Amino acid sequence: MKSTSVEIIEILKKAGHQAFWAGGCVRDMLLGIEPKDFDIVTSAKPDEIEHLLERTIPIGKEFGVILAIKNGHHFEIATFRSDSGYSDGRRPDAVEFTTAKEDAFRRDFTINAMFYDPTTDEIIDYADGQIDLRDKLVRFIGNPEERIKEDHLRILRAVRFKNSYNLQYHPDTYQAIKT
Image (cartoon, rainbow, N blue to C red):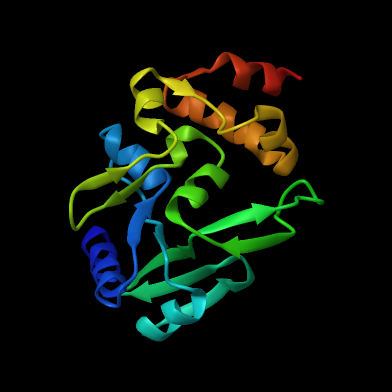
């Protein structure tokens, strides 16, 4: 699975796009845990992803997410995006395709906002997730209360990350969860 994800990144990069592993696989790799999956983020738009890869399923195309199937493995590939409005407390009302940096800052926790380029061995960390991993902290990106209002499941994710990885809450994160 890992080598196939690198193949996909190479295909996207060869076509002139940025492409990285994203989120949990990067966090797990830095913690010395073998990732269960390899999510990919890219500057390629959904139509471009579908054009470049042989087998795809538009599982969340309106949100910029395409499922790619290669060598018997499944990979979620998402276009860099920013979200706006969460009127249902779970999903964005609209997305805008954007840059890697803006995509990182729309994510839930600093430890999930890191990207990694396996072709250059480069970590891209706009939100200081590596520092929080080192300090064993779960910290919301931006205003914790707003992040929870956007997606109520983030409370459960915070609890799961704290307990699964033996972390502590950042004080602002803890206060927002309590509230």
